[in-house]
Length: 124
Ligand SMILES: [Zn+2]
Image 1 (cartoon, rainbow, N blue to C red):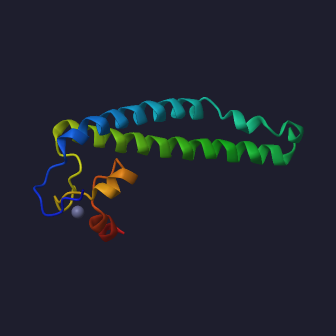
Image 2 (cartoon, rainbow, N blue to C red):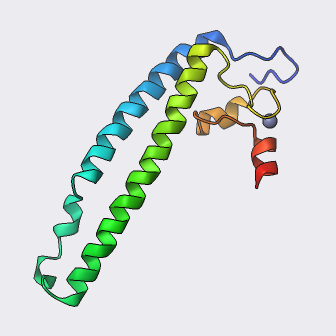
Image 3 (spheres, rainbow, N blue to C red):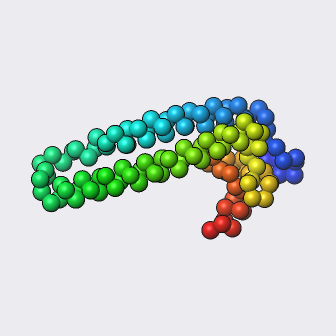
């Protein structure tokens, strides 16, 4: 399964499903982003706290929360798009730093990974 000594290229037969997966993720994230930005429906649960200081604080926190969420989603979208363009260019699964193949186990967990575990750790 792992082809550590082999040539540096991701198995072509895996690229298609990965590309489709990434496209689907981008679609989902875009939808989530829209719903986050149009106001979080969960924020209206505590109706009885209205007009209190607590409600105001909740509202502020809620807004901040949506902002953080939306930023996070944006980052995810950028990552996914980057991975997708790498699928198309044919350099998907290759570490951006050292040029070695990224472990397929890692890609299974994090399909948008652009650096290998070693380089990721070195960055920290
Ligand atoms: Zn690397």
